[in-house]
Length: 196
Image (cartoon, rainbow, N blue to C red):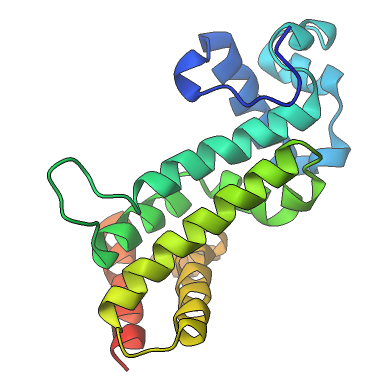
C-alpha cells in the first residue's frame, strides 16, 4: 500500500496506476469528486474498489496525484529548457493553451475540486501553486519591468485566466481552427494586453 500523504513522482507509476488516474480524472470531471466512490473508480479502471487501495490510499490521494501531475506539466513550461537562458512568455502561453485544449478535463477538475484537497496534500499543492504563479510573474515582469509587483500579479492572473479559459470554450469558439490557430489567437490577445 502507498505511503499516506506522499505523491509519488510520475515515473514511479505503473501502467495500472495510470489507468486508474485516467479513469478517475474523467469520473471526477463528469460527476465531481464527491459524486464518485472508490467502487465506481475501480469499475471504470477495470478493478474492484478494494483493489484500488493497493495503488492509492484513497480518493484524496488520487485527486492530489491528478492535480500534482497537471502541475508538473505546467510548471515545466515556466522553467528554462537545457541550454536556454530563460523560458519566454510566448513559449509558456503556447504550452499552456495546448495543455488546456488536450487536457480540458484536468483544468476543469482543478477549478472545481482543488478546495477538496485535504492535508497533507493541500499545503503541498498550495506551495506549488505559489511557486508556479511566481514563475509566471517573472515571465511577465521581464516583459514589463516598469510595472509594480501588484500590477504584475494582477496581469499574471488575467493571463492565466485567459489561457485556461480555452478548456471551457463552447463548440463555436473552439472551431476557430486547429490548435495552432487557438494558440495564435490567445497569444495575440496576451501580447496586446502585455504591450498596453
